[in-house]
Length: 173
Length: 193
Image (cartoon, rainbow over all chains, first blue to last red; front, side, top):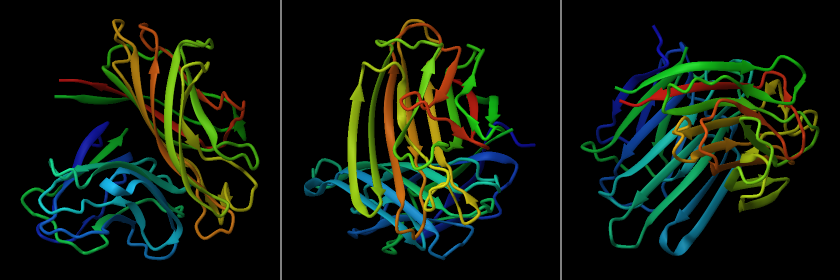
């Protein structure tokens, strides 16, 4: 029986570059994803991306804001026609964990679009090189209920399996 | 162990509804969290503020808000603002989805486009301190349109009174607009260990 707030799944990524929560229960109203992720090598220009229901057509819109990142200062990006949604930058440096929270309201509702909001933060220790926090918004233009969520980094950089973990939480009744 | 309970939920049925209100909120929780999706029913209005009033207070000196948001609108590239105020008669939670019959947003291609809402009221029943509020609000978007509007942002607010929160009225108090049909909000209560 669905509760008001339940941990639905925990995904260990191994050393891979993407994770998928599939066959998501339709017994809840909203989804929350909490993530701790860490890279095993430094790669610049990573985006952290999301896809719903495996859709790869240009039906995603996104907008995100990052504060920090040393010399880049404020950074805002947006796109209204792409094959995935960008949840902001991914941590550039290896062995520096970052944390994310993603909110996806009304994911089972078939009458409206699907929208998610996200927070993220990371720090490069005391090097003062790269540390940042930001938020992001992603929409997919679909009336379908969300049954799967895939999260990945666009640079294909591997995760550190000892630290990286994604938790899927359902809010319901 | 922390527990969560759904206190109430509202789905608007009229074509336009001015306020979505949660009243008689029990004081037995530590925090309140509101989830949902809504849209402003005014044609062509953009960057509408989603606001709330607490316990029917409509005077200044009760609400403080600071909003940061990014947006993309009508071909104009990205920008951002930070807007703070302590003199409003409502709390600004962020910029919300808007528009009804404008071709490039609102209901498009058979998809009813509404913005996302996630708001938490911390220690709302504590009568020794003010209540802090954090909000994530997302605006409406249209993929691939020549005129489009998208935004996302965060707001930090404070209800500057030590009374417990018993009533929350969500609306668009700045512009006196109304929510479209099927706007939805869910109120959860969260208890600590």
